[in-house]
Length: 165
Image 1 (tube, rainbow, N blue to C red):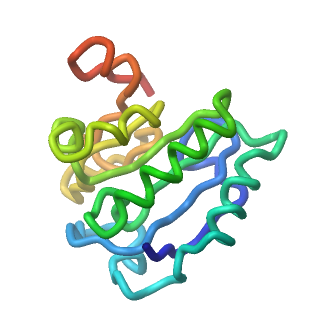
Image 2 (cartoon, rainbow, N blue to C red; image 1 turned 90 degrees about the vertical axis):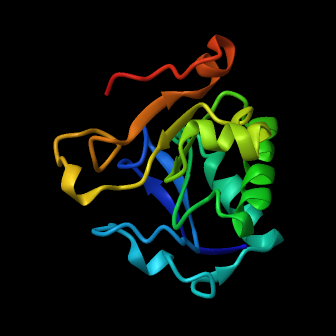
């Protein structure tokens, strides 16, 4: 996997103060995407043990409420196994911290191709960015079609449970 950046302090992509990992590579290429520089699978930096430990350690900071993984597209086939392992390690090391992920894939699609990754997520913002539905007043999402999902409640309920932001 490759990544575009690790943001030490992020207050835009989830609740509280977060550490964010922007993965590299996206085939969706949404019109109006706020991060088109992350589309190229060959861009950014190689993810390795050092970058993983840096991300995990930064997330452990006393003032950090959790981690967010976005991109690019975390659930692209080239990224999903590494992303799942990082989320698993985050939950093992910091069970009290929240994990968020942004994906253009819908919750049901992720359930179909990799339901295990959902075990390690607290919140999923799903759906592609749709420029025609862009709304700058929305919290934690860019367009009205995107949903902020309480993943653990959804898994228990057997149906999507939305968070009200």
